[in-house]
Amino acid sequence: MRRIIGFVTMFFLAVTVVFGKSQENIIDITFNKLGAVYHKNESGNSVCKVIKANNDITYKVVVEIVDIDKKPIGYKKTYTLSSPFERYYYVPFQFSELGYYYLSVSFLHGDKVIFSKQEGFGVIPDVTLTKKDYDSPFGVGAHYARYGDWRVAEIQQALGIAWVRDVARWKDFIGTARNTPDPFIDYLDRHNICWLPILDYVDANHGWQDENGIWRWDEDVTNIKKYVEMNENRILVYESQNEPSNFAGWNKRWPHPQGQKWRPQGWGVPFTDLVKQMHDSIKAVNGDIKLIWPGEEEWIEYFDDNREDVANHIDFTAIHPYILWRKYPETSPFYDGFYKMQKEMLKKRNIPTEIWVTETGWTTYLPDSIRRHFPPVTEYQQAQYLVRNYLVQLYFGAGKMFWYELVEEPFGVHHPESGFGILRYNTMLTVKPAAVAFANMVNNYRYLKPIGKYLAKDRKTYGFIYENEKESGAPVLSIWREADEKEELIPVKYTKSLTGVDIFGRTIEIPIIDGMAHLPLSMSVLTVSGFDMDDLKNLYEPKEQY
Image (cartoon, rainbow, N blue to C red):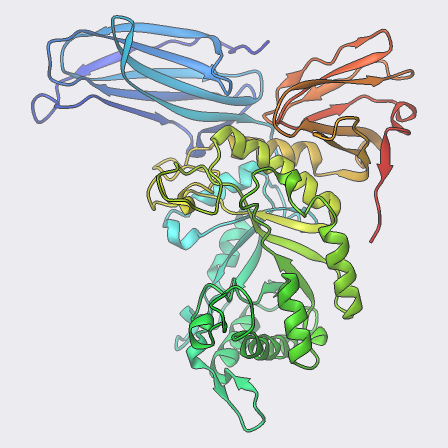
């Protein structure tokens, strides 16, 4: 059972509103810690500012803490608010169990809620990055410069997310007297975060064709080389360009014959020439530096057929596998043979088979009358799909994965780009449920080696078997349902007891009755440890190597 440690008290101060009487109800909830993310048994607090509108109605103010499922955890206070004054309620807390929680403040008239607001906060395992973890598969995309709030790295460090994918602004160094590495590297170093830099866009309109029919970007490529030289030995992998079909004018200068801008017929040949030149100039600085090539299948096939020596200029590839019209991670081709076919295609072309997922995600925007190709999800679902998606794609062949993205964007509640973030775009950059799920995924899966796919009897049950490399290969099962809840029965002969943990770090009871383990499955991944391997050896299909 979840409980709050210590004695939680509240008090309020009444302060007259400066400009007279307020014309609207206001509730503002802030936390004392950046990100509103805490560790077990860590003391924290919140200040709830309330302003009652100018009217004669007396409200009850209810302050309550509930868990992610909106279940009370044992604390609820009610106050009376009659005067239109500004008041502050101070709420200290300390939790002994991991999880995602909401602090809720409501105005009630009788039993009717007139106005309410809630803010979430997290209690996470201590996965703070204490050194750079280049081998970690866990990354996130970000726009640090766009946020204008560099404190965000403190939160990423606390969440244990080892990698960040962000723009390398090489153009900022052109025409300056700088001869030192990009200061962003030092900043990330201080927070033990590994950087995957995307080289800022090269303008398609800068290209010109030489006498041999090759498109050239000599000035841009020279400046990129200078930037790489400044950062030599600090960065050993770059992403060449981000989605050339969408940005930098490629599909406008060289449009697709049928207007299908995503496909490379049109802009593909000049883009190939650019990346080959970038590759050669970067390798001249340091042959160990890797340059990632945009890796969607149709792009590689087209480039290979239309330019010589493409394979020699591809160190490895990256994809952006968003799940568009189908909502669930497991209903995508990435669960059903994609990585095997993709790697076979790469092998045929003598291209390295390492694949990074440099963008993937689900968005919590609010739908409106406009049909958009990103399916909107709830914050709870975003957390569920984040964990499921990472486990699925890392199992089948992704080398590293970068969630898009770290912080929400301020484009409006109905804009899909606004909801991908796992931190809220507010003054404290508070965590959404997905951020807490991410930290627990890092804690539970960083040192697990996948060895097989669980053989579920029901086709809508999914799972994998792992060996815990930090515990002498002890087996761990991840298991979940596609879209409902159901009990999974697993016969056990040698297993004595099992421990289950959900995506928010909460302990889940798993009884063993008459030789049967009863696993309560839901849309959230359940991580189960304690199995004797002899009980699992016939319950999984060994991982295919390709």
